[in-house]
Length: 479
Image (tube, rainbow, N blue to C red):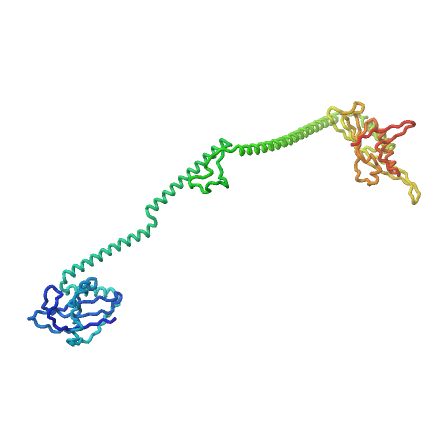
């Protein structure tokens, strides 16, 4: 909007109110400024020049003042009061005549001059200039109506009250932003935390007392919540189902007692088995310790005997006599071997405490047979050898005259063929016989080996040895 600056000269009126309380005869012009439509638009203003108040009748009309003048009648807050805006036509802006009168009198307005205000680039300079203009206008303004002054003061006081109220509300808003919780909410949170800590402490104390009570009385337990209970499944927050102590029922106690009895029986069986195993191992340990002691005694005896023999000084002819006796002994042994075909490979003595020691003979019997070849019809000798052991021992369960017995055990049978094993008959298995039938055993051994080479496959346990008109039978016991 462009500001218009106009200067009008109204017709004289018979009756007209004056703005100032006292009539002024001077030619001073009142400056009145209209409020701008937009506060942000400071570029243009409309300035009107009002004529001076009507002079008295005896005063001459003032001449029209040329030049630019400003109407500066101040209004509170830059607005026209309501009491003035709704008044009679006499309260209209001075210097403007009603349109009807202007038309009747045919007063032509002066040409309008457009005055554009230049804005300064510096806002501080503009503000300073505005303040200076306001001060000048205040000094130049004539005294206002007391009613207007009161209205102006009232509006100023309202503005101050509103500003104070605005400051208070803004301060309260800032405090609310800073403090998220009120005092009541903070007190509620503190009280809730206090009661939670107290509840936890009480629950821990209750559980400790229940554990102590359960340890003292095995039949005292804490009740467990039943899955199909008719009561509410949501107990109060301060009470738990496991915190209610009660005694076990008879059926539950009997079931636990039976279970404990079964467990006790099982543990007793385990203890018995462990005790038997320990006892067996202790017996074995005692036997081994005794055998070690016996071996050490024998070793000590042999060492002492060897030392004693070494310490002796044999006579000069002892070597010749021992050599002669050894030669005779070897010749005798060879003679027996040639006539009986029985070789003794080794002899071992085993002690048996209070009874006579056992003697273990490792023997080898060789049988020589003369056979004819079917193709060449020539005679040839065939040898077969078996190895066995004879243990001469004392049987305490037998009668005194039959106390000594001989146990036959075949050895190295895996080296013989299956067919020959079948022909051996009772010699392929172990057996025992009385010691006084040793000669019969040798005869039976010879005849059984001879039968093994022939067509007759004898497997009889008893062998008959014929002497002239009688017969003797070897008493054989299977092992």
